[in-house]
Length: 172
Image (cartoon, rainbow, N blue to C red):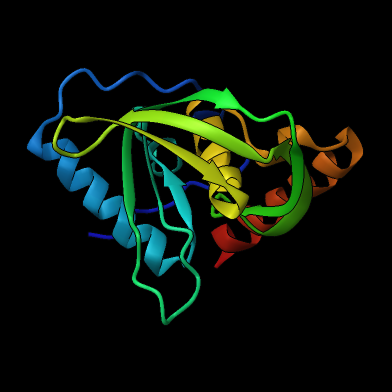
């Protein structure tokens, strides 16, 4: 089932998400809904706070080549365990901030630990777009948006555009 994605500015996007204590069938269903919502948007990542649920759950799939098999990842309680000294800059966007993009600098490689849908601990190293995406989604769990990593004037400009977009959407 597709879920509604919350648009910035919204106070729920600025809250810290609570850890997931026990994996339930309800949480597994939520993860499936989030993947469906992400693919439909279309996007490469989605965090539970973006659909109004303040739980530490993210989904991502950075496979963009149509000839490559999808690689959906579901991460409960993800955390960055290590970061590289090397940095990279990607033009980031966000499903909660549609049509707005900005260059964001982050560690080029990260090691992330999480619990998978079966309750098993996982750990993996990510680089390139995957590293950027997983850090972007984990930021959502901390109440941070990609625009929090850019200069204040640019952030204010994007926020003003989003307020106008939300106003226009409300008018129909």
